[in-house]
Length: 136
Image 1 (cartoon, rainbow, N blue to C red):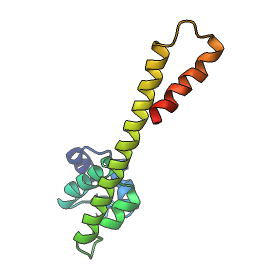
Image 2 (image 1 turned 180 degrees about the horizontal axis):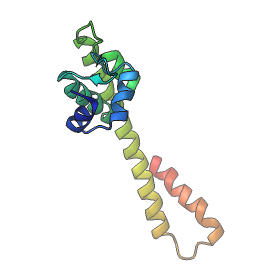
Image 3 (image 1 turned 60 degrees about the horizontal axis):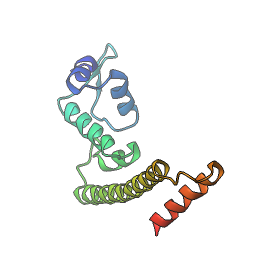
Image 4 (image 1 turned 180 degrees about the vertical axis):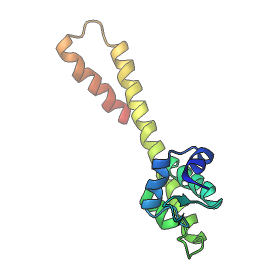
């Protein structure tokens, strides 16, 4: 199939497909005598894997190291380890985000319910004290 059809079937722009090819992520692309690229059916699912991996937070270099090249096969052990590492990264990020959210909520609460008689110049320090107390 030509790049236009692949773009339509994959939902990706032709420029993105060419970028993946140039980056070494998409293999098995043939060039016709007229210079047009010719892609096999496996290109559709390979692009879906690449897009899904990017959406999950993998960098292009990480994806490239896990995808089989034109002559190789999938490296199941390395793939599983990489997925496990990515899950751990996501869990650490979730913990950081939850902590950040808790701090923001304390800051909001402190701003909304500050003592009415607190002088304006003393308010930032009071809010910071509330945040320090929340951290424990």
